[in-house]
Amino acid sequence: MKLTLETSDVNLIRAWEPDAVCIGEEWLRQHLIVAAERIILDWQPPSPGLLKLADLETAISLEPEIILLGTGAELTTPDVALMSQVAASGIGLEIMDTPAACRTYNVLTHESRRVVAALFVGPSPP
Image (cartoon, rainbow, N blue to C red; front, side):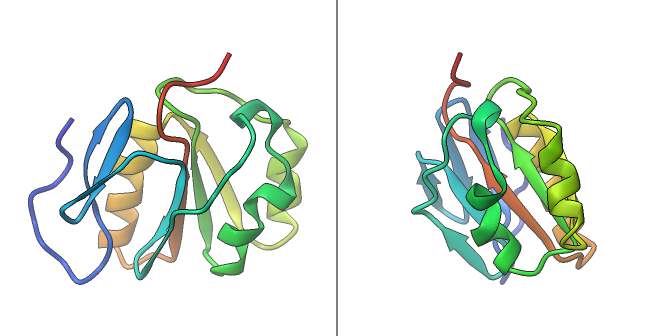
């Protein structure tokens, strides 16, 4: 699914496929964290359902106003306590499937919002 055609000085997600996201001209085939000025490729979280606050510390350290958690091709809800734990840091957490997180990330980035997307790439684990 192609998301955007424009070029920019910030990281925008140009396309999504079930096993990859395209940022700029590069197809990335691993879980990642993306912000307007930074891409973190060494994010190695457990499955979305087992995600803990410590797994989002890298995203939190970027000081966003909101973190978009893309849980893969399908929506998977992590422990409900995770949202309140992230909120205690003064940061919102929105949970959605990865394609929706990619689209929402681009919209918020275009609005110059401080947004970070933590994306599970590939099929959702059982």
